Amino acid sequence: MEVLTRKHYADIVDSWLGKGNIIALVGSRRVGKSYVLKDFIQRHENEDDINIIYIDKEKKSFNSIQTKNDLDAWIEARFIAGKHNCILIDEVQEIGQFEDSVCNWYTEENTDVILTGSNSDMLSGELATRLSGRHVEVRIHPLTYAEFLHFHELQDSDESLMAYLNYGGLPGLRKVGLGSDEQVWAYLTSVFNTIMLKDIIERHDIRNIPFLNNLVDFYADTTGKLTSANSISKYMKSQQEDVSPNLILLYRGYYAEAFLLDTVQRYDIHGKKLFESNEKIYWDDLGLRNLRASGAMDSYMEKVIENAVYKHLFYLGYEVNVGVLNAGEVDFVCRKPGKTIYVQVSYIISGQETRDREFGPLERIKDNHPKYVISATPLLTQRDENGITHLSLRKFLKEGF
Image (cartoon, rainbow, N blue to C red; front, top):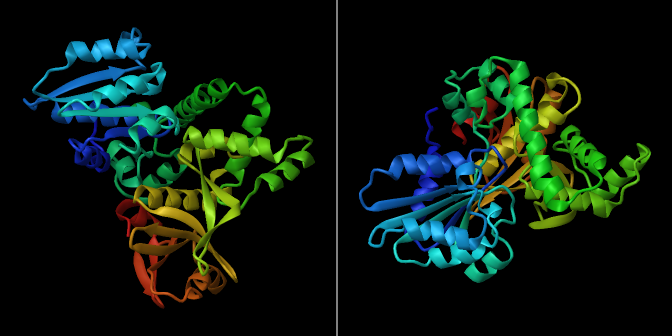
């Protein structure tokens, strides 16, 4: 199958070439990191001055590369002095002590190293210490809505948006196809089980697997709601499951490390500071979230839309927090260097009560930063109301702001 270019990531990777940094592509399994590498090869392999050395630890043909010595020998045999050597290693954490090898090769003249890994501490510990910040991490997300339309050759429509919100954006669904609901959910189940087994249970030697699954299901059902380890512990006890807040925090950290879930902290809009207690949980992929949620799609549409907006804000490069006011909450405070915006998310705004609930908190923020309400209100594209921009969900997910 043809490798489709995800231009956003292709541009980021290319922009870091030749700048003396290891480029680390991080993200959940099956989110498309390998295809960013394959696309790099496809775009650069015919350039005369580039020599690409590629290792894919998910392929049996690379099983012989188990240690740093194996890795060094493989690269040495293919390294061409005088050319721009690009060393690409997929799922590098599968190689023992890969840090030693990588630290040596990336310092070679006119050499770039691009790595992928499926857990967030791939470049922590010894490698991060030895490099002293000489690496950049590029987070690979599931497909955006615009990419979803391109990958599945769909027209922008309400039906296409519903398919995206329901099935999510894992690129592998392109090969599975969207024609069979049963096959889509079977694929998503396989991906979820692999993440849980390989990146959490085996990696951390988890014994309490039933609770690990119960907790992730709880986070699916409470997506976008304020939670704390203490409140979850009390709830679990009411369900005859006695678990400590510390165990909840530990397991939540494992989900985050595997890029299954993101934890979003609260931010005091007036005091300009982060709160340390209570946070919201959002999923990396909408399809995996829906797979584990109870109830039908229409019963949790508001949560899915809020999760979709969060993911797109993250993709657009914002640091995202939950906004806290004296008299309410703003769904998202989004910051980049020199820029702050406020975002409220709603399913449908059909009456004055809903309008007051969504627009009211933004109207109470007395500063000049841009303010948005994003909703799936029918026939809406974009309009301004008292200085607040009301954006269509479809328009935002396809075109941003």
